Length: 473
Image: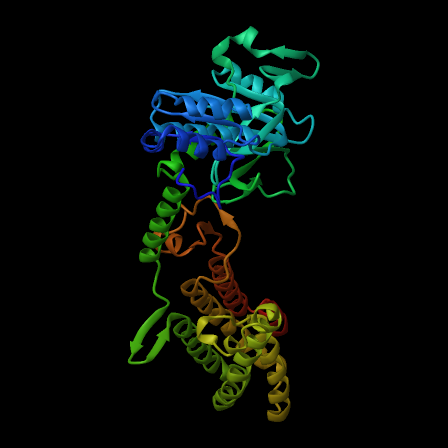
């Protein structure tokens, strides 16, 4: 209006408010006409005068010459500008047609998608019967209303119609009334229906942040497995309400995770500390105490039995001093070999035996080799040595398994409960969110029973020493 037209865009709708109108009125009739003549060009779509202001005669004359429509409105300029921009954005936005059913569920737009024949339209019809509103079936035209908002509407030919296989086309408005349909809706959540497959993993906690992008705007999407007997419409209702609750700050998944964290914290309070004694920087673990106690008891029993086989007790001590460190090395090596995938990535933990990880089979194999060489050099009968040593190894193994208990190792499959066990064992066997079979306890008791049976057989003298040795092994 001041005569500066360098960046003027005549192809836009021109909106004149109180400020522009006042400036025009202040001009002379000639100047007003000259300015408006420059403003109004054939490509100008229309001119809108807001606030119900009187259109100057010069404006009408310039508009007639260029065949431009002049519109008036009583609405305030700022509000009219906003409503006009919003309307034009929605009407002129690029449409993206997607296959699915758009439903208004509790005031929230839910886009139901899935493979052909999965039951999208049937689910939509069930939702209509449950009081929700149909927006579009089969083809949904979606556009971005702004940078974060998607809007959907039906194709005009399909408005208020829904197609059901075996029935045909249904006019939802005629059958269920005007309250069962809606002309358009915001698209806030996408639901993808797919056939249930045991080989697929479906979200069970609700923390899967999957999204789908339409017209440059991303919205959350959940996958629902379809299986005979599942009421999909009820599940979708629950998904919509749960999404709305999350938007309002009520997140059931987060609540569950908090409860689980608290439960784990409480369980850790009940768990036994694997460290028995702290001596400055030195920590002595229950695992080590159990193994050393079992070793001392085994040595004591073996030395006590040695005279019966005419074996010198000092030879027993010599054998222990040689065999024990080598057996520890063999037990650790056996354990590392069968878990090499882990230790190949964590080489520094190979020597961390204080954290557990001694395989009794590796220790027995190493001990047997050392015994064979030691007995041969000391001229001791190997079967005699096994006869006095093997039962003692069983009692040592029975005690050593309790080291696994303190380290929460050597457990079995998950079970519903361990109510038949004492509380301290049950609490310690709660691992990774579930109770575990205490296989350490079963092996400990089995070794203890075997030790007792061997003592009974030995006292009765009905079984040879060689057979007792084999049974012990």
